[in-house]
Length: 188
Picture 1 (cartoon, rainbow, N blue to C red):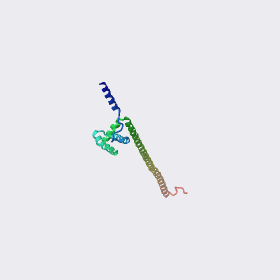
Picture 2: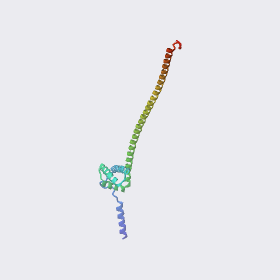
Picture 3: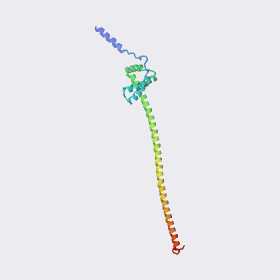
Picture 4: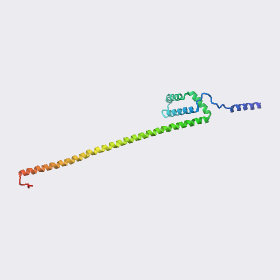
């Protein structure tokens, strides 16, 4: 009996040691899997950045996931089988996720560059607006100074008019005085 037990465990150990390293048919290739996982993680991030009610996630998420599967010419069943296979081989899954990480970083860098360009454009537009406002303020101050200058010139003109009126009154007074008393004024 001891021989049979030893033989049974030896055969079972031999069978367990023999692995089939060939992937089963119908799996998603590692490069395509990396692209699909990138899309799925972007969709996840987009969905979880907004409202997180289960109905909303199902309602808006399923269409996005199905569109991603369609872009990679696969379906959810094939994706699950492929994910289960790659999960059994952590080194393969690590390689795939290294590619996913690189792609997401590249996408984040391009988004950051676009945001920086937009920020520069907004700052330039704001500076142009501020310059325009400063010009408008200068014009308004200049226009405000002009009426003050006009008021000063009006005051000066009024003063001249007053002095002319005084001179005319004096001339009229002298004329009347000369008419009444022709000898009272000295002759020139």
